[in-house]
Amino acid sequence: MRVDHYERVAQAPVTMEGSSGCQVRWLVDEQQGAPHFAMRQFEVAPGGYTPRHSHPYEHEVFVLEGEGVVLEGDLEHPLRAGDFVLVTPDEVHQFRNTGQAPLKFLCLVPNSSASQPVTLAAECSRPVE
Image (cartoon, rainbow, N blue to C red; front, top):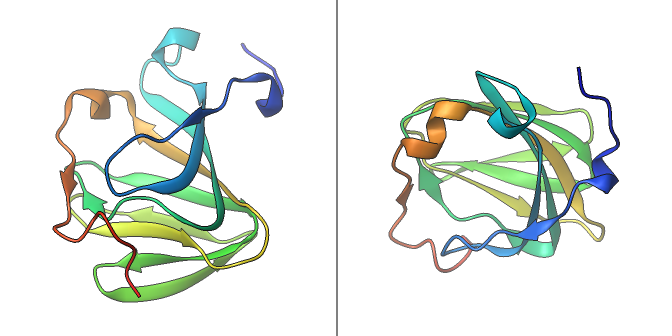
């Protein structure tokens, strides 16, 4: 068993092309003894966004703080604390902070995702307006 506080886990910038103002903390993964799933905590600065991308695995998101939107292809869904999202395999998606404070969310992915491809959307280098 591991019990800790998320702020004691190092935060690192998200360096994937097409992201802006994103930080990630790897809270739980194989290195901590979790054989199947990884839990990450993302923080997106006001005006920031993740890349528009897709991948062949699902992931689940739970919004902790802030306001934003998740794009499902070209469809925009508003997000606020307490909302959750299921991103199914191969869905083009992007998270954007539309509020004045950081958007914080948990994201769970299978550990096997580390060896699977991520496809950036053609317009990933700029946010959708």
